Length: 179
Image 1 (cartoon, one colour):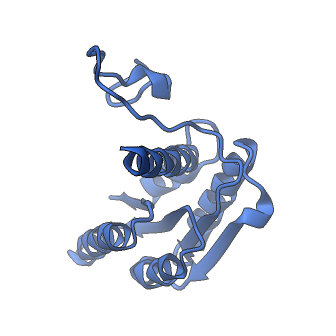
Image 2 (image 1 turned 180 degrees about the horizontal axis):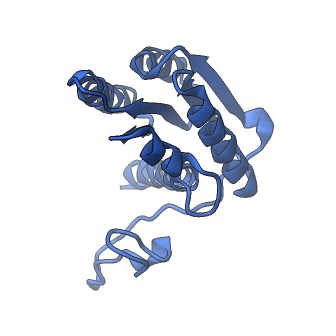
């Protein structure tokens, strides 16, 4: 294992019990239709995150024509736009990007909690995976550190999570249609 909660590869996760069927995704994004909704508040962070996310998806064989990036004013507005995209039914996976820096009030935590619950509800209702890519940090410097491009970036994780869960949903649909 690469660290707490982090697998070296998708195939590391296994229950290893004879006769048990297991479904896993993979990181080939070829043919996936991906919707990204990003908040402009702290745009110096979310722009870097969005760009690195798209670059990672392209490196995983996604095509630029299959990726849509929608910009909204801030993190609070993410859910409405994600829901609109989900209702269209044209995407295999949706990703919400935002940056929330905690202040001296509870406002930031209320935003983060609200958006997390809303994204879960949208995913369940639409049956389209929705990835919560909202960066929440106690300081601007910590938020910035999570948005730095590179193989260990939050964007890379989000791209891989989106690709893997979209592939798992495809396999679940096939498994249920044959079983």
